[in-house]
Length: 72
Image (cartoon, rainbow, N blue to C red; front, side, top):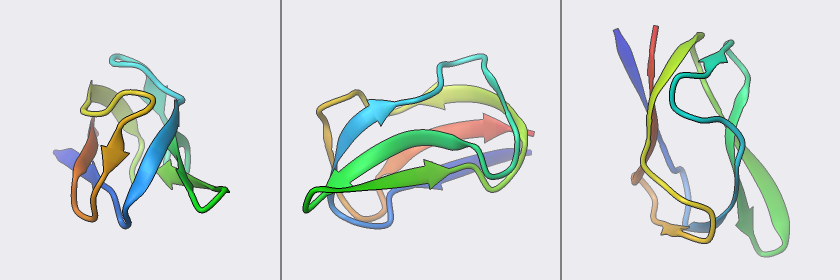
């Protein structure tokens, strides 16, 4: 089953931490967002393999935008 990881706020994508094909555990950071000079990690709720990353560093995401898909 695939987990879609979505943004929970408007923010800039500061750093993409994982790549497609990387294994992640529940609680691992996928990307780090920057909002009002605060770094906010976006974490995977489930362990699995990163199937896709929908953002690049420097992108601006809106609430609900797709960030990544993790296959469990």
